[in-house]
Length: 549
Image (cartoon, rainbow, N blue to C red):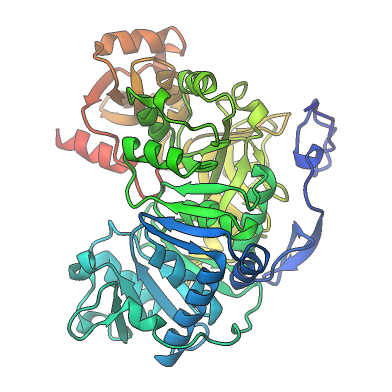
């Protein structure tokens, strides 16, 4: 693709060799008003709601596979029918449009069916993570006022007692238990004849995000946000009904919901559900099911490549390898290019508050821009701002603010947090980064994770990217070690594929970084780095472990 010159929307001189998505064949977009006071670019032709996407898929590809999990397979016709029956089951219990339904399920077909059934009858789905404990779940259920919860039988002890959540009227387990409905009871009756009418800006689901302080905040993802993000992935990935996407990340979090469920719904493709990621099982499944795309963190690609029999699997159908959450090592990019020449690696960056994608890397730039998370998505505007709320010059570091059709309207029952995080339709990400003259975005660190070594600022992503290039390193995380003299020093936690002395890693970094950025201490971990359900490394856990040690 030949880059072209582009006028900066802020009115500055044209950027040199700026690149954007206008050179690709994308559906037409236009400006529309959203959420009262916003004006955002959106796709002109689109489904209005989540259920409209399901109905479109069932109409356009009724006999095509929709869901695959273990030995169970469902077509789009069957999915739409079952979801409408679940909607009838919800309605028979007395649930009304706008009521909240909590879902505490792992990766399984019932997760998708419950989400679609709730969308059919205008309910708001509240996602709970299977790693959450009873106090966390009790807080979410109370804050959102959920009236029903669907949960795994193995997680029954995580569901709070009735006295702790008095608004919770109904409990539905997958298999059922004394005094508890079974999930199959929801589909026992006839389907609801027609879906409940909801508006594009109505909330479709609530995902709780952990802030730097205080209680989790319930991000309200509207139907229009989810539809917009699905259209972005469809356009940028070139997704069609022939695609078969493996859900290797948790479905209950924004990447699983949008990149996997919503995108395959939009294009009427097949979603292959993996209950738990294990590299050997993943490779067998990808080969057997002729998977065409997935989104994983770089460490998962590395784990696949570490399998001695990797070359024995027929992965020729695999065309899109999305990733995010960490830099992709150059060595990994090169090995995948050699072993799977038809695979296009595409970096993506987003958050719950942006309904997943905010930037996507065109695959032809992946190898040449390994330190970037890509270009702003179609219709997205990314500004890099200083602490006074002023845009900084191209290439300089500031806080990333994101604007567009995927940005949510705010947090459930929390106007203060909404006012603090959203400014004129922009979401303040809390990430430090930059955007260059070509429009490539770089994410350097969370504001709270930046290291200040005697007044010198160190961004962990830069050091992690250098460590990722070492052939012995599977993954790494850079954190601050407290220092009474300098305030903070650089510490690295690394996972290795081969034994190597830490001094060799320091020498590797010293040859590629300023001396003050080189890790002064290194911990070699025998276990994978702790990650949240979205695949991001939980540096707070690493800092606590270091302090304890």
